[in-house]
Length: 226
Ligand code: PRP
Ligand code: ZN
Ligand code: MG
Figure 1 (cartoon, rainbow, N blue to C red):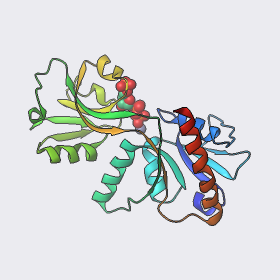
Figure 2 (figure 1 turned 120 degrees about the vertical axis):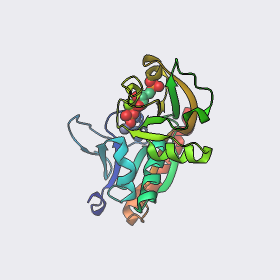
Figure 3 (figure 1 turned 90 degrees about the horizontal axis):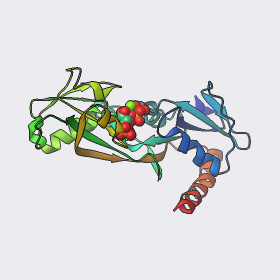
Figure 4 (figure 1 turned 45 degrees about the vertical axis):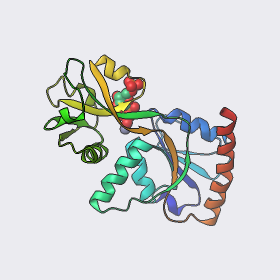
């Protein structure tokens, strides 16, 4: 496993809303990388650090299982993974290192524009399509709403039109996806940004020293942006 080698392994999203800024931040911290599109693993040229480029949804689990040392994650995916693991009895521990100032989005319930939706109770007995069933059911339970879920890993926004669900619960950033699909945002159930996390078990002294060097640089870069 990556954790057995002496290089600090950092997981980043291969392509998506967090990729570019995660890598930009590491570069601003003085870590040099040569990224090849096709390669899963990228070695730093000036530090004993490797980048593992994977799907965002896989990163929290890789960190919690200690397969990688650090990970750049969206809090939405992090919290969904944590809830799922707690529910299924799998270790869900991690160390939160820093909130990051990018990747802002919200997880919201949306319904077709022509829907007569007035408030959350209108969702009783309805079906909601989502990629985040644990976050959604957690919220519905808190609000005392009973609705079923249809779990889709993509194309959630087409579910109402396709007759698969009455509403959706999905990430909203600019709102363009909802608009393009005739949907209206109703309730924000979770707000999210990027976060840097570390595996729960202690790092080797050499790796810990690298992290201790990285964090103040990262704070400096974030402060300079304000
Ligand atoms: C999310 C969501 C929508 C889109 C909304 O997907 O599923 O498709 O972003 O953004 P907008 O409000 O700016 O239109 P995304 O591809 O970011 O997440 P994923 O890579 O985890 O599927
Ligand atoms: Zn994803
Ligand atoms: Mg998407």
